[in-house]
Length: 301
Image: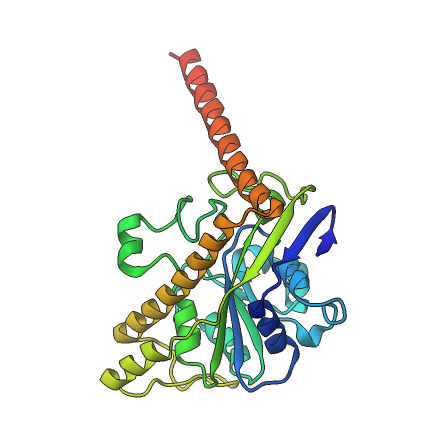
């Protein structure tokens, strides 16, 4: 267990957690790609401080590379320098899988033994459900067709020149650290105390069968490298492949979510209670704002 700022952060002991530490701490020739749900603006770096043992958590060499929205983390030179020093790279929301910023991230993933992390939901969800039941989530009919997650994770995996160790993570409890309104606006910029976040690590996700089936029909996939890629723009067929890989990641995260919701340990139960509490508070606040708006309109009639 780790404690920062009057909050507790606990990884669930498991063989999968031990396997993740081996990938993170010992030399190997794969690319370690971790993926997780995204519940709070402080998920990264706090949860990665929770994963690594005290002997390694302050050693830059063992930290992951991650992405953060360009318009949030890289608006000013000072914040850009701060996040860049923490091995965070920019990504532009809405620019899709062919944006050059994703290629720069992939160049990090191309190095054997590297560790990169993605939040494939593409934004924060404080609904307690992966990629759904929150503002700006894909409508259910669309999600049923193309999935709940962004396809960038599929592109990173499909064209990586190294074997990929794709490891899913799921956590609950960070929602109360920096709670949001139902429209995604932060309620506070100050981390709130009294929370316990519980992190669980899932089994490695294998997508070799998806890639092999695609290549049998369409030919070998091109690969990016540490110096870039001969091509970067994806075809329609390739995007269909990314979608299938993202769906497999979605299934793995939902499996972990089901495990968490069945967990009766106090920290997990309290985490889901807080999610419900935030939802009720947001609904009550929206109702008060509606009533105030109606009252103001009546003054001008």
